[in-house]
Structures are given as structure tokens and as C-alpha cells.
Amino acid sequence: MKKTILAVLALCMSLTVAAQQEVLQTAQKANNYFMTKYSDPTIPTFVKRMRESNLWTRAVYYEGLMALYGIDPDKRYLDYTKRWTDHHQWMARGGVKATNADNQCCGQTYIELNQLTGDGSLELTRQNLDYQIGTNRIDYWTWIDAIQMAMPVYVKMYAITKDQKYLDYAMRSYDWTRNTCGGGCFNVKEGLWWRDKDYVPPYKEKDGKNCYWSRGNGWVYAALVRCMNVLSPKEKASKQLKKDFILMSEALLKCQHEDGFWHASLVSDVNYPTPEMTGTALFLYGMAWGIQHGILKDKQYRPACDKAWGALKSCLHSDGFLGWNQGTGKEPSAGQPVTFNSVPDFEDYGTGCYLLGLTEYYRLCQNEK
Image 1: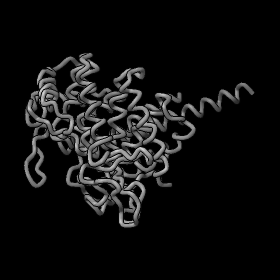
Image 2: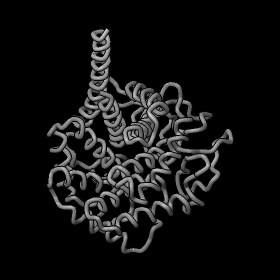
Image 3: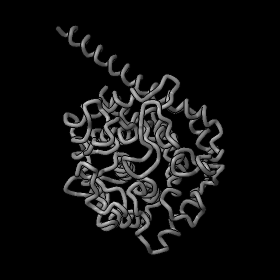
Image 4: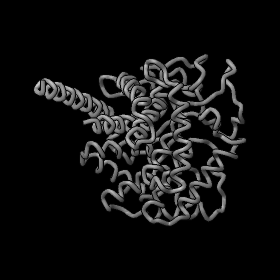
């Protein structure tokens, strides 16, 4: 009997390891495709016009790459990242006086790389944050994507300097977007976010249901994780973010489709009935993290994570290209139609979202051993 039990346990463990390896290999394949296609990370992007490669779309990719390095410490990843950071002089896109959250997103990777390797200097990143704080304005984040782009930069800077002004500014700005911008972007009753100041609630789809954009909510969800991950659970700010994280988790769980995907419009499929990869990846990222940190119940949320992994696995083409990736925009209608074969205007942020989701799911599987 004892031998039988041991054999079953060994089999279960081998299956878990095999599943984990599949997750890692899937992430590696998507990333290898991207690093091969964009072998020189310093070259600007040319979508309609030239943009320096530390724009937000590329910055999100590096968030994912740094996460991948955490489970797959391949020196190529660090070399690729350092070449990018050095080229941009570890500075926000647009310089020290940049106040657009999109242009500050690159600071997340600057901080992570510096703390990991000791390379580079965070002085210009810090000067940028100090400049914005010095304007005495907390109303810059007029769209919810900005919460992911900029808030973790301030919180990470607080975590390494212990200077309270960075955390205070982050939370005051977050509260303004949450409660004031456009009448308050967070619908506490439904646990989901309106997209920006122009979507004065209630903003509706044609079927009369509220319009909640998947990736926009995914940005907020990921930001909450990226901030809580460097804060002490005992801190007031962490407790506040945790409450919103739980509200969002409960709402998002109800929005997942049987195939594991979340669609571009979270509660209405009247115009957008097809899968969407980026929101799905960000929700997997958050839920897998929440389970591991004891915030979300494994029994309740693990099935959603497993289904999301199956959905995301199906997005990968044989060459590593990612399908079902909605292009840039600010609402469900942007970049439509989204298909398995459609090519978005930018693909770097999609790869970043994908890597964030898969790496956190890998950690979830790893913790089962």
C-alpha cells in the first residue's frame, strides 16, 4: 500500500514538472521570437511615426522579460535589457521633466535591473519622479492604463529609498483616478474600472451593459500586484490596494469564458465575441500571484488560472508569434477585428503581458511540488 501511494505521488510530481516545463518552454518560444525579430533593442519603432524604443509598449515588454529572468536566469535577457537601458541613459522617455505616465513606464525596469545587478544609476529616474511631485499636481493619471505605467515606479522607488514622499504621491494619485477622475474611474459596486476621464459613467455598450475594457482593467490589476509585491502587507497602502485587488478578482472571475479567455469587453459580447490575449494574460498574472500570497483561495481561483493557461497556450503560433493580441487603443473596439492571425500595430506590450502571465503561473505550479 505504501509503495502504491509513493508511486502515485511520484507520478503526480512528474506530471507537475512536465506541465511546468511546458509553461516555461511556451514563454521562451514567445520571447525568442521577439528577441530575434527585434535583435537591436535600441532601434526606434516606426508605426506611423518614429518613436524611441523606451516608449510604454516596449517598457511593458521588459517588465515581462525581467519576470521571465526570475524563473529562467538566461544572461541573454540581462544583456538585452542592459543594452536598452544604457542606450536610454536610464532616463524616462522625454527626459527628467516627463509627466506622462506612458513615458515613465521604463523606470520600472531601470529600478529592477539596478537592484538585481548594481548596474547603472537611478539618479535621472529619481529626478523625474521628484520633478513631477514638485508640480504639486495629482491629476496626471486621467486614464487607468497610467496606473500600471507609472504607479509601480513610485512605489518601487519608495521601497528602495524608504522616502515616504514617493509612496504618498503614488497613493494620492491613485485615489484621484479611482475616486475623482471622470466622476471616479472605479465602480466599487461592480469591481471594475471605466477606462478614462472621457468615459463618464455609466458608459454603455450597444446592448445596454456597462463597457469595461479588458486590457484597461488588466493594467490596473497588474499594477496592484506590482505595487503590493514590494510593499509590506502591514503597510496602510498595501492594505488599501489589497481591498481593490480582491474586489477586482471577484468581478473578473465572473467574466471569464469557458474557453479560458476574457474578451475585449468584459461584460458584453454583443460586438466583440472573440478571445483576447493581453487582458487574459494580465488576469492570469494577478490571480496566480494572489493565490500564492494567500489573498485568493486556491480552490476558487485555481481553475480559472488553469483555464487561462490553456487559452494562452493556444495563442502561440508555431514560430512564436502571438495571436489574439488586441492592438493599442482605449476601448474594446480598438484594433478590431482581433483574430488568431491578425497583426497588432505594436506587438511588444503583448509579449510583455504574455510573459508576466506565464511566469507567475509557472511559479504557482512550482509551489505545488
